[in-house]
Length: 229
Ligand SMILES: Nc1ncnc2c1ncn2[C@@H]1O[C@H](COP(=O)(O)OP(=O)(O)OP(=O)(O)O)[C@@H](O)[C@H]1O
Ligand SMILES: [Mg+2]
Image (cartoon, rainbow, N blue to C red; front, side):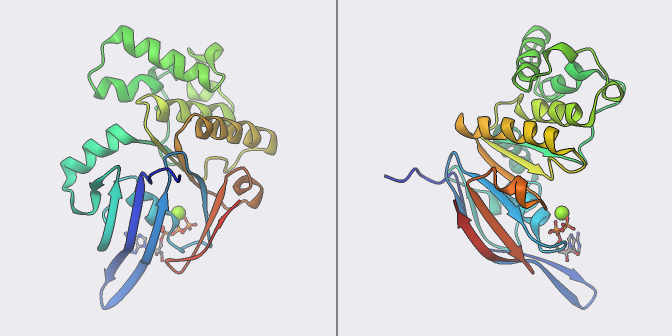
């Protein structure tokens, strides 16, 4: 029996009006993801990958179409409701979400829990455990400037895991990393996938996409191919 989808998108469109020009960043996209789906989104620059990721991550809403996340219609939510769903369900590993340079690893990872009002002792325990999961238990007192690129990316993953989200979204998580480090990062995602998380990542690299179980290719805002492996 197939597992129920956590994510169902029907005829999603995201249009931008630029003067008298209409940019169809997403144009009639329908996709579903199972609870432990593990997918790569690929496609040329400007094909709509980040736009799709922002909608999946509840940072943006579609111009038209439906987006059902764990039974809730996200397409119709206001900003407060989006923020609530985002905090509860989603962990982001975005390259642009930089770590705070003055905070050490532990403090960076703890940050989402401070916003969530979790007590200091529990925060520390959970942050240490998240750093342990990405193999950085011996670097908790280091600041980002005292870490390698791969270690920084692993801190970002630990931070994304701290609220135990069901969905982990990553935009080019291995960009700028050497192949050994990329492999280590992808092993972490594979393990999270086996643990039941839904993982969706954007990548330009075919070798990286091959770690996943599904490759979705976008072109001009549309799904060009959707290959399960
Ligand atoms: N805020 C915006 N206003 C107007 N047009 C936008 C906006 N954001 C994105 N677009 C347009 O929508 C299209 C899709 O953009 P998107 O950022 O999703 O592409 P992408 O596939 O992530 O590309 P890249 O690989 O370069 O990151 C592009 O043509 C872009 O110019
Ligand atoms: Mg992008």
